Image 1 (cartoon, rainbow, N blue to C red):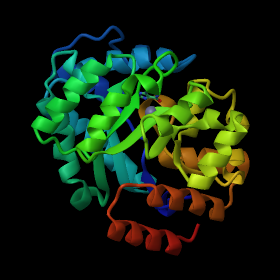
Image 2: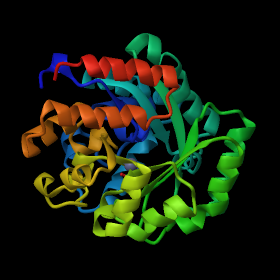
Image 3: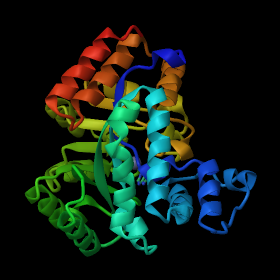
Image 4: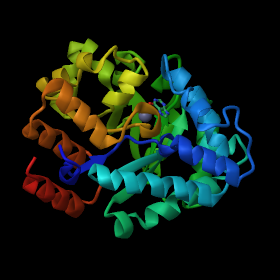
Length: 331
Ligand code: HPA
Ligand code: ZN
C-alpha cells in the first residue's frame, strides 16, 4: 500500500492520551517546566518495552504529567488528527480518560475542553469527522465514575458516549452497571473494553449487564464458541487493535493473532490503533502489518474498513459518503 492510497476508514478505538509521541512529551515538559524521570528522548524511548497491559499503563499514566493546559490537550489532539489524516482516517471516535487528569489536579474543563477545541476544527482542517467518548478507569470505583459522569453532563460536555478502559482483569463489567444505566438514560452511546486480557465471560457481561453497543478488543472471544456464534449473529462490532495486542503480549506474535479467524467466523471486526505512540503505529501501519503477515487482499481490507464505517456512530449521511468513497478506493 502506498502512502497516497490509504484505505478510507473510521478509527473507533483510539485513546487520545496514547497518541502522545515521545518528542511531544519532551516539548510539553519543557513548555510546562516539568522534569521527567526519563528526561532525554533515548531514555524515554527505552521505557517502551511492555510485558502486559499494566506495564504499559504505568508509563501511559506517568507520561500524562506533561498535559497541563488546554493548549497541551489541543496540540496533542491536532498532532493525532494530522497523522490520522495521512493514515486514511476519515472519521474518528476518540476516547479521553478524564479521571486520569482530574486525579492530577487538571479540571475537566481543561482536558475535555482542549481536546474538544481541536476536534471542532477537525473536519475543516483534516477532513475527519469526529466524536468524543469519555472512558472510565475500571480500576477506580464506580462512585468515582458516576461523579465524573454527572459533572460531564452538568457542564454539557461535547461527548457522544462512554467507554471503560484501564486494568481489565479483576475489574469486571458487573462493577459498572449503574454507570452504564445512567449514561444510557442520558442518551449516550455505550462502548467498553472487554476480552483484551479478560476472559470471554467479561464479553458476555459487557453485552448483557452493561448493554454495550461495541466491544473494544474482544479478541479473547474466540475461546468461547457460543460467544462467537452470538457475536456473529448480532454482528456486534469488535474494535480490534493488532499491533497493540502484540506489544502488550495479548498475542505472542502477529501471525498468531485471531483476526483472520474472527473474519472467517463472520464477526464484525475492524482495525484500530489504540495507543499508536506506544504500540508502533497508526491505523495505516496496522493495515500494512496485516497485509504483510496474512497476505490480506484489497477486498479483505475493504471489508475491514467497511465494518469500521458501518459500526461508527457517524450520521447516516456521513456513513453513506464514506462507504461511497470506500467503494471507489482502488486498493
Ligand atoms: N486497554 C485498556 N486500557 C487502556 C488501553 C488499552 O489498550 N489503552 C489506554 N487505556
Ligand atoms: Zn484501548
